[in-house]
Length: 336
Image (cartoon, rainbow, N blue to C red; front, top):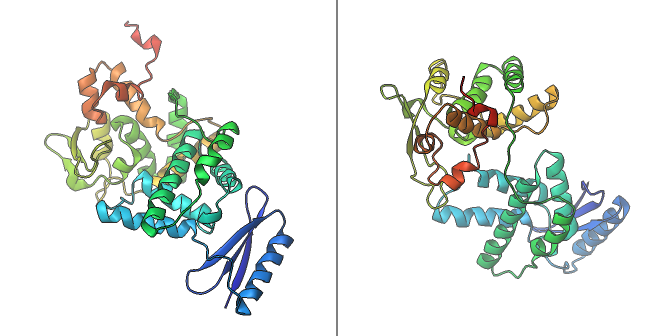
């Protein structure tokens, strides 16, 4: 039994998906809903009549699943990692697309929708790069020959400003902006969410590190926190680091109720989402949760800590990497 579904894409085009058999589908993009419906029902009728379909689609979603299995065989992908959320996003927005027919229009539509959701050019560049990796490795494992859809789309995506380099971000919140965001979070989502934002500044930790911190990872005597599997370009798994909790961070930890296994029992994705909503409601432009890590790092230098001391907090091993997280204010050099 063949079934037909059509849905409108953010580009304004319509995609028709014809499913037949077990996990088999063929999809195609059309400029109008009528054309998509007509093609879908004609193909479904051919299949029902016993005709051989054009070619069973290999969907992007199926290749994402295959890639996850390949990765799990080497090292499982953490549910709190950026890669996990990248793969979820690819499956959510491109899952039904036939990878053998993946077109530039599909990638423009994907990037446009991600941009509308708040993702910037650097994030979109990383998403597109992850898609390329998924297609390359999964196709090799399955013995498929896929076109270089990502490579062909990159020039146009770049020209449209949808993808781009990260550059050096220098956005720091003002005291007033941070106070307003924290007050909004406290009022609309609760104390733990507001304190998690403050802790992001006080500890300079990443959101995933904050949200998976356990009470058993806290050394009450030495005032340290064990950050497990800390991000590292060479080896993340097993890269556990003891991090000093300086006074502001320590105070925030101590005032959390010990009613859950985690110190801050909130989701890292939800924390970013609520932070973005707060900024949008308050009219605060171009401020992201990850900027709190930059803010915390910059404050440490402004308070007089040396590079090796700051690196103990942030986990950076090289000054050139740590420098990216440091936006010192020139007026801060004046001593009264």
